[in-house]
Image (cartoon, rainbow, N blue to C red):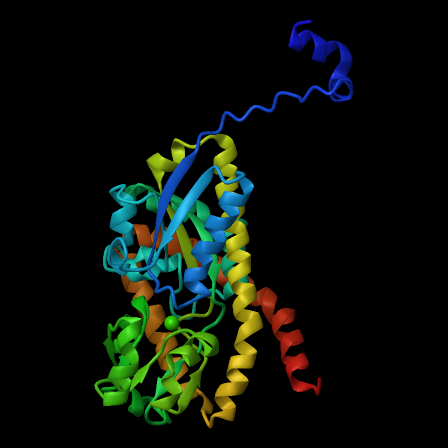
Length: 360
Ligand code: CA
């Protein structure tokens, strides 16, 4: 009997009962992609996000879709990854888009801008608001389609050799600060320094810089900053919820089957949730260890926060007047931020503050 008519007549159960394996169609090709990260391998949570993504893609495709992950500098410089994806040198990048604000400030909105959205709000804007749609529209100019690929949660405000007691202490302060935030630090009198992760410790130890921010307790402790600067400030007002992006070359993505495109989307979402979970789970223990090692945990003075807020808003207005891409994305982002803070004020914030005030 011809196989197809046999299946039609007997149904799948009949096929199995007859000991005949149903024809499983594996039309999917074997695919090999390369991913360039902007991060060193030693950062197991951030670089690890790329590995989590690649492993999930492999598992979901029964090993047919392989993505090799490469640390910053292996295939291209850490800040060369957008060019790498745009030009098709690699199919994928995993990065913090605010590094690329020099190309266009709009990149920063996909990651973190001072006094921006927190991690929960950012995910809501991306998946449910217009965030992903607007950023993809912008990224299309660079032959890129993006997927949220992790979030660190609110970061710490960094390590300072001397205490910061007023805005005066920011004047002339030489500080290593990530990405776009340097623009605001500059406006309140600081001197932003662009130093790669591996060189911060030495610069802080020598006094070449007065302060440095990196991520939060888990990552900062690994780099040992507490040995050379004891004042650890919070919060990182420039990174309330920085998001990482998985950027894919549009042509490579469009060549995928519907099934593989879905696998990419699902694996990216998994990596997105996984990174925040890791940071939230690991930061408390690291913070306890730092405090036990005599680190002074200090809040930024309100005057410093207020000045930074004012300058941030002024900067955003200036950018809206001269950069149409920024204006379009920021307008939607800032409306979303206003409503989110209205909502969180009654719910998350009130609940969290109460829980943090009682003995647990
Ligand atoms: Ca940072």
